[in-house]
Length: 200
Image 1 (cartoon, rainbow, N blue to C red):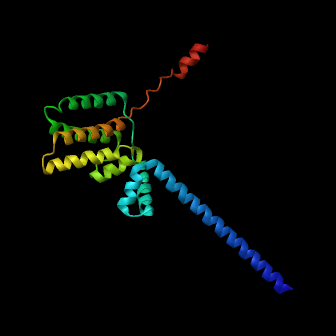
Image 2: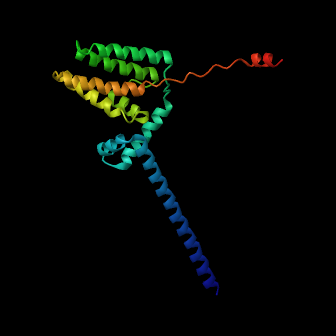
Image 3: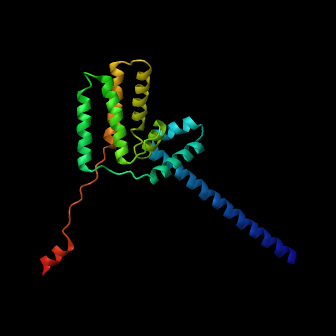
């Protein structure tokens, strides 16, 4: 009889352990699927590009999470309205020079995008690191950045067509517009002493 109770207790204990293991596995799988879905939604096409480049979903997701952690440690700031206006004016001026100097305009567009990134708080590392950092908060336009950069590199090796240069400037413009985030102008509140004086 004791042996029977022992066997029943052992079987019950094993069944509980098995159920807990299955539940733990189910929770882990759900968290993993939710994490994958979150990364796919956040990074969009950049998610698929990273999976293809690294050859596996696990490696790609580890890379994308590392990007998120790195960018979280940066001090990315929206622009003050005056800075945004200055950058917008500079872009307008450089666009006006395209007809007379398309190559110079492309170089100016690259310079202005870098300056804007630096002003926002992005570090000026190598191109791939800059593109990776941008992909965290601007995944829809990081491909524009890569396309513009590729055309600029091709043009350095052998002159490209004016149409290619125009497309590169348009790619830079898409990124520039997305990066040109302006901090909201918060309404000024009167000092506490004024409120107190008004009441008395």
